Image (cartoon, rainbow, N blue to C red):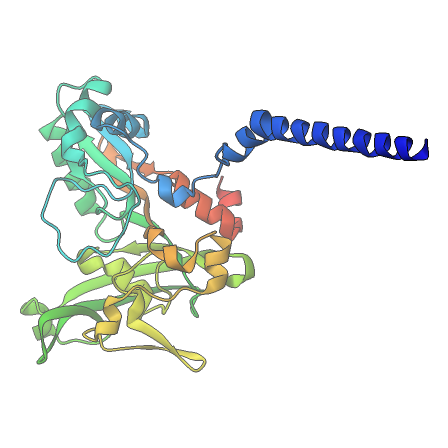
Length: 352
């Protein structure tokens, strides 16, 4: 009898085990597998969404909605990053934009004009391709002449730029009269721009130097003092003057700058300028790992970081009725604003 009960118990356990196995397989087949195969939702990094447009029309609509000013034939828009005026053959590009588009402002002008109810618009002032901020358009030659006249009245400092640097400069504010010139090297054909602090009047007469009047002010330092938000007013942007100044004069290269950031190197506890003709200066800088961590960027993905230069504001002196100044101010574009929030610049909270 015991033997029969034992066998029945074994049989029962076997049946139970078989049923459990079947239940497990059914669960995996009908539920678990669908969960496993469902792709996890991942957040796309803001730097990978700088060019989100799927068509020229979508791009033009985006630009046309970022209106700063639109009165009496003058239109001010907030220019997006990595967009040029017109298509040109560019060599030695050192900036990478994930999913970059090749639309130009010239391509979009007819759509923008139509969206803003103009028959035609002409671009009269804009930041360079790898900058964002205030750009001016008009439908009138008269307005264009008035803009040019106002800018001449303002002399050097009609434009104010915001830059994010990859270290805190030793000097927090200042006003400098400098010059730039092209430095040659017998071993290299290409001349490289440098900043000089002294030059002769003869150099100016021969146009051997380009005068660089500049004012700067550190607005805020980031968490852990890794970076700075600096306001810069410059008399020129020729030869990428703002990048050159930040890197080789302030020893605080601009975040995302792959042109001049490697011109300074740390030697012991000091930073020094190195020969701009060395091949090393052609490489992107090695960023502090703490900065990369704050920005959620892997060292291998460093090239996705855009160059953080924003034309924050432009003043047109005596533009309104020939008497009042017109101040045009552009907010930071979303990826740049995200950078500033990650770095916890306190100034931006106050400014907002």
